[in-house]
Image 1: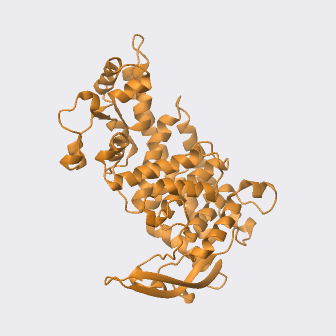
Image 2 (image 1 turned 30 degrees about the vertical axis):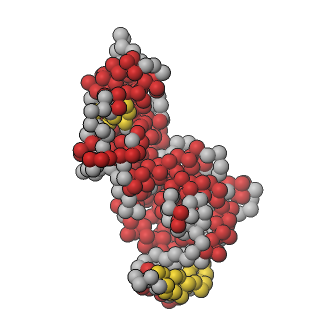
Image 3 (image 1 turned 60 degrees about the vertical axis):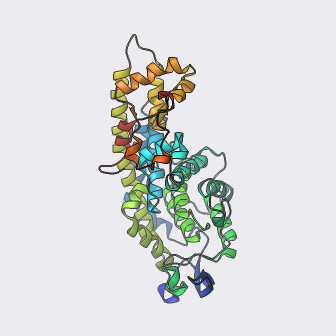
Length: 415
């Protein structure tokens, strides 16, 4: 990264930085160069002109979000669709970081973590971190982000729950800082940069009139750029940054349901995404970035609306098969549970329904007969023999997968 990469008026400062790399021989090699420290938000922009130029994009994104939210809440239990969509978001966000696991593997991992590998476990932790962000009473803040990071990251070298204490770079480490695509702030600049980021994200600062407010989607785009540019952690920045988009949309009151996902769309446009972030730093192209971000929100919402429609139609079909004047309501309770969790065992069903194994088994059998559940096929997951459930275990120890729900969640030809 060179000074010449940055155009006059770029929104930050370039400061000296050094990066230490361990060589193949075991020695240490230090590379020196420049790092970028972004200016505190909000940027100095002509608000009226910006909003005028972006009106159609912002309105389209918000309209798509509200339409998706309405579809999600149209069922008696919003969690029937929300949980399924959130599984997809965790999977897609991890995939951007080249951490790939199928939805079936994730569903099996929840009940049998010993049968999953480290990759599946990492994606599952991503889902847990996202859930923590939504469930926490904390606003978007340093404390919340560090709590989520501690859930997501396990490697001690990446300091779970703590900001990085080393210089990082984006690009081939062997080529040094001058050849890096981007160099985030030095570690000693991260705490203050994140405090400024928190102040921008804090709605109290807006309400008290301390700064001019932009529409929430614009502020979300700015905050996402800032977080990824500061790159506060040694690992997990991308996944946390994308999770914050959805969490902040709910905590700010833009929407009531967590449907502002962007990861699947960004994965399909990752080159444009990374270029857009970089162009803000080097050229101050805020308008282009906010337009891209709005497009991501809108088109992902449209895709998730189609996904919600598939899931809702499937739910209605299953509900019709399982309901009847003389039938118990217990299978319908298991239907909701299967949509939310994607897998279950008979002991788990018994616990959920508050009954014995023997009483729960006929209800699970009914869901199998109706096509809601099927016995998990471990051999199809590519698991080594020693990681599969022991042969000869009784039915009570076997897992059932909501395969139809998984098929409805994923895109064509995807896992």
